[in-house]
Image 1 (cartoon, one colour):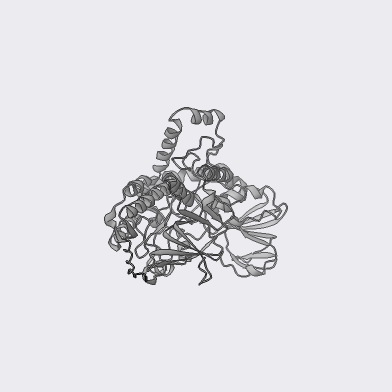
Image 2 (tube, rainbow, N blue to C red; image 1 turned 90 degrees about the vertical axis):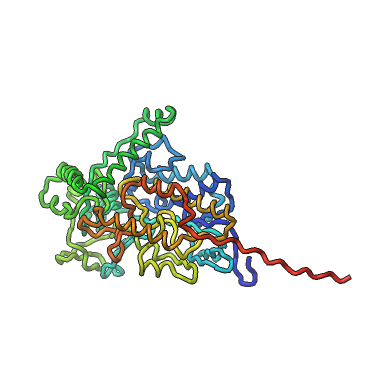
Amino acid sequence: MDEAAGIDRIEIGTVVIGAGFSGLGMAIQFRMEGRTDFVVLEKADDLGGTWLGNTYPGCGCDIPSHVYSYSFEQNPDWTHTYPPRQEILDYLKRLADKYRLRDSIRFGVEMTAARWDADERRWHVTTGTGQVYVAQFLVTGIGSLHMPYIPQLPGLDRFSGAVFHSSRWNHDLDLRGKRVAVVGTGSSAVQFVPKIAETVGELHLFQRTPAWILPKAEAPTPAWLRRALRWVPGLQRAYRTLLYWQLEARAVPFNWLPVLIKGGQAIATRHMHRSISDPALRAKLTPNYKLGCKRVVMSDDFYPALCRDNVELVTDWITEIGQDHVVDTAGVERKVDAIIFGTGFHVTDAFHRLDITGRDGRDLADQWRTSGNETHLGITTAGYPNLFFLLGPNTTVGHNSTVFMIESQIRYVAKAIRHTERMRADTIEVTHSAQNRFQADIQRRLVRGVWSTGGCDAWFLDSKGVNRALWPGFSWRYRLRTRKFDPADFQFAPAPIPTARPVVPAFR
């Protein structure tokens, strides 16, 4: 306690923000190195990140189970081809217990601001509880799926019924027999709409832009396969490797051979035609952009749900909301009891909501709003010493497992910290030249991809139309880029030499 300032000051080696896949992975890496001088700040009351907060019906992952996990902690007991939300959460909790992480996590503690102190050469991390953590290193693992995006619809504040975002699901509300308006047809809506369509009285689904939807081929994992993966040496790693390369192949059409995209679109079109016979409904659901330009969705039950008598797909957007109804651009008024937003999250601008002050008082949010989210390898940014991002700008992948990218980053961060300590340095900061080279390289490659040429306005792009979310190309190339830590890309400042105190002779 800094009694003079009335502040509860806690000194620690490293502060990690977030206890999702990124933050837990970093904490596990520290544990495996024998480090104990770190703390994880988690604003929620439990760990899990995205998989703790999203509890909507049907919530799960669209990456195969055996790839959506850490390579050093594989799980032979996934029960389905694609992991449901609860199994992912249970997996993370088991790892937290195995590596004794709970003692290092501060639940219900949210970082409200972080300020670099040039005199102390330390980060001062302010929290909502009033505590200030003073740390040499700051690692943010906040992810990109935690800030719900809710469009500003006129009259929403007048609506008297239930209103919530899919990531803040209201489980106290019984939807049986209710008239429900669902806004958005992205990944989350595609998962929960088929579930609630079975019980609601009416479901009005408001679609602004249709998604390309591929068959998911979801199936239970046979018990014999789970036993074999557990007991046959090397089988699980081989199975995981096979799945990884199958997914990695999807980068080819998105980045280099767009002619192959037509094959994927043909599969998606056949998938739609098998489930929907109405030509008018098919026309509403057919995108006018290339597959891959927006996030590709996978589902086996979404199209059949739209064919139910109690479900209506509305392509006229909402222009007004009243006390008990919504009105679309065609002037049609629909009475509803609840409005559910399946409108996704703030992604490229999520970092703009962080209150981080770096060297010379520079503000990260203001800087990135002006110049764009620029980093080196999506992990470090010039002007912010000892600050590391996990799953930072341009490190999301649309074709493979994000966990693979996270693993690459936590290993890189660990190497950077170890190198700084070996040099007996206090600070590490990426150079502007290294950062500029990286940015020029990825932006040059991104402009060739389907995200820039596919004819859509995707969440990958920032307000200036620049892709600040995705990694261009193969994920294995990112692993190679981060496998070796190159000190030449950084500048280091040695720890200050303590000033010798003058010797005052004692009086005799």
